[in-house]
Length: 358
Image 1 (cartoon, one colour):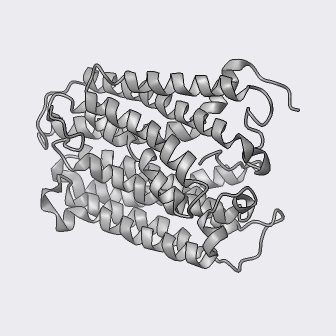
Image 2: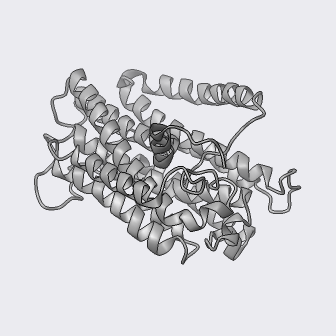
């Protein structure tokens, strides 16, 4: 047994903060983009930079606690299969660092507290926060995960709500106060929701391909183990095509609220990511660990893709209309350069680790 860390460290590991932080960044991008659009009179409202900072802090705290709590509950339920997988066997419960009951109580408290943070701002934010927790725990973890190879597709709904929650917190004064939680007075937060939802399957299927066989050994029917690598790649490519259609929304839906330049940035960035999916070869030579290197490369690029898409969204609404196309070209040129520098730095570290995500 490994040396037991402090209780605070164990709590952080239960919450899977690296995954949570990535999702909360999407929420913060939604907040910043909303407030920039208010300042440019693209949408109605009255927001100061202090309002923006407050919304970011509230969303970061509430979202982290709620998502972290649901992750902890997930680890409690999966304690029987985690020891059988290399990427999960070092989690706190399999290591014996914390009892399942202790972890469960912690997870429930964090999930409730995180969702409650949003109540003073708007009930719809609290609703979608608690919805995400309940959906992830009961629909994905308990019901779907061990029953269908489409588990990650449906389960992805829970992980797609952070930008919706962030948008509600930022737009709370203009959000219709009716009983319809879907009515947010703008389609933009739901398009950001769809971006994460459509990104999730090819992202996690690339990880499943890279770790082919591990899920099957513990009874989790991931698509590569059930339908094979070729079927998995076909469905991943379909989702890439859907991401292209989503990015092109301003071209065929002029009332979407998004500038046409967004379609250009989104299309170019999605093609850049899709290339990594097309490069995956089910017959490629495996590495020393009997895994598919190109699948891992696609998994890592998908993380960069999601980050770049949300950065591009904030970027494009921040640029003055008179210079939007100049800045669009500059962004397209800068992204591969920055990505290349980041990958060179990463490749210099031979101790790369896959995110402990699910």
